[in-house]
Length: 199
Ligand code: ATP
Image (cartoon, rainbow, N blue to C red):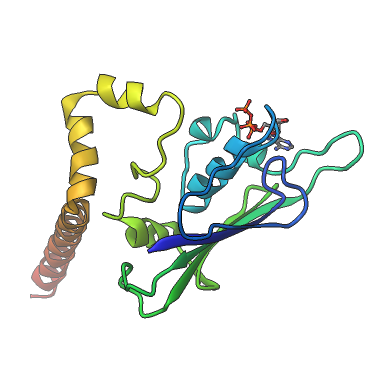
């Protein structure tokens, strides 16, 4: 699995549609202060489902949309697409390439797509689970992240190791299964109540 490219429009300082290709090997992004280098890593985290606007260096979700300059008016939406190489079947989807897209409008509405098919945030979350990518992944180490990892509680640090060891998925499935079990037990109780009334 490899990040092949990013396409974005209207995200933070990137008003026009831009394409960034990541060829095999190391890619370094250089530029003057304030030119948008960190906005690129923000875009990557955002498209993978980041919900915390604070960690995207904003105060409200609308802050990810191009807010205009003296020469150019603000845009009404932001869209980012990641193209991931899946020729090694790293993701359990039968496609050689996976695209993940997120779009948000100023109204606050937004959508996610996997391979251009509308999906839920939950699907994005599950796609990246145990890959080290994604919302809670460790593959993007931002400024201050090492300090925060070292100073967090041991249970929180354990989460990072669980993600790396690939067991987050099983913990998540266990919680989902327990939730469904509670729901089913509730339904069963309701059916028994109705049956009791009918008898
Ligand atoms: P440094 O080297 O100082 O860390 P950088 O290259 O990482 O800088 P960024 O922090 O990515 O720069 O970009 C900051 C720029 O993005 C600022 O000029 C800011 O005005 C602009 N910016 C952030 N959000 C928006 C937005 N919603 N609309 C327009 N411009 C934005």
